[in-house]
Length: 244
Image (tube, rainbow, N blue to C red; front, top):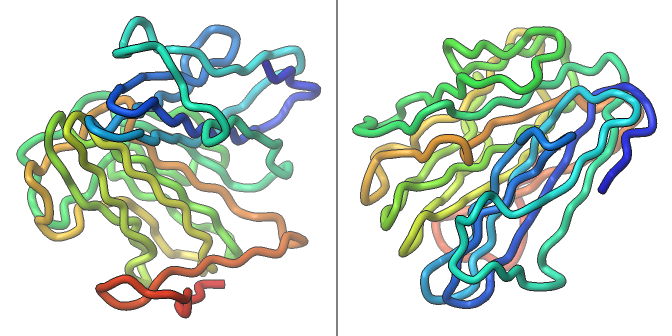
């Protein structure tokens, strides 16, 4: 358990690796109340599932990870690859975290995914009706999304900004498939950031609720950061595309 030493806004990240050929559902909780869900399982091999949430907590709160009910084929978690981390965000920095309250089906190419269940919305810059985060202050921002595909299907999504594409996310597997990505980008005042379908790539254009999340926050001006991705359509050996 993590004991909260003082009031503030905290970020938590969990990665769980299932045993080979099995699946397991876990959840991040604060004082017994669910904050986020992780699905881990690929059908044939090990399966990794992760999530990141941002939440306001008070002194004395406790945060931990546990199995989500009895939703598991064997109840086992693979060692070493499974982690739990967290830290307190700087006071006064814009932050938000939201998930889907219901699954989305029959989606169309480039459709915005509206994460309507808000966990935290400091400065009220995330719009739960449109799925858009509005950048009020310029600076470096961290954005993260986890997308869980429906059973036996795949889907491709992406984090977008007013300036263009930031990152892709692939989700798919023999069962559900969990895909995540995190990007750091320099944003200008007035920019918007959101998650949408990447064209119509996927066997079923649907997103599973609860496990699918979208979060972000502004880095403090004293923090140093970078973000890069592989360029081109095929595998590359270097990371030449640098955001920050």
